[in-house]
Image (cartoon, rainbow, N blue to C red; front, side, top):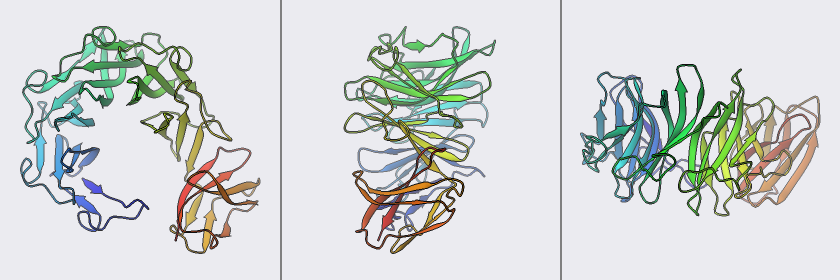
Length: 380
């Protein structure tokens, strides 16, 4: 597993670990870091798996914390076989990490809590473990988790029954790992409308309302971006979107939202992967309407268009532009102020940017047939 730290301008922080990176060997041929946790004392915990649960703790400077586990790492096999898979991890206010995981492939929805020293915490759930294998004859698969400010834990994912019907669900647990009876129905929010919704990301607004996002899929596997809001008690918030939900379809893109964050102004930013692109959707805080200038709510990070060098001094090289239609090139600062703009109809373009002051800028590429491409770059 590797943990890297970067400076505010995007450059590797050479004071962290070994020239900016800290590495730990979990002992298998394939170790994976899934979540990073910032501990109350400034230390850093990497949580992942290597056929078993793997936790490693680093000092704030990126050194192995030898006081944790054995030589800075904890290796735990919760199931009977070496088939534990870390899905997500969170941190309660007392510094205890909670890991959402799938055990042996048979228990796809399990939480494990560890003490600060790295031992399975027997005071949580039953001997440190809690979860639900099934509900209403459906298997439950956990995709994401959220530790709330009061240390309650919300899990979300999807259910699947023997007839292949799948839909989204959420559940909430008390700090001690017992299901919260005041959330949804006996601790569970279970969608039962056969619409094939899936939750992959959670966030909480300042007023305590819960944002759950993911996708809605048709029978062919096409996915549209889905975002929803729930009250503190787990009820859909009808003032958000349409009866609590907003679904956006973008032609040519799979809209599975896998990450969320809440801006200081309350707007909701979500990220989603696609086979060749990653895209970002931003929503207004109250009505769930997408917010953006050209293509509503959508910013594309497209692999076809590349820039170099980055950071740049004088000449910015653009490749992968369209030769069949006009590309509108716009350079803006981080406040959205336009600094330079140009229109070209060639695939490769050299742009003189020496007049720009030092700083971070956003290059936006717009054409009639494609969504906006946005790429950040640094001007030296």
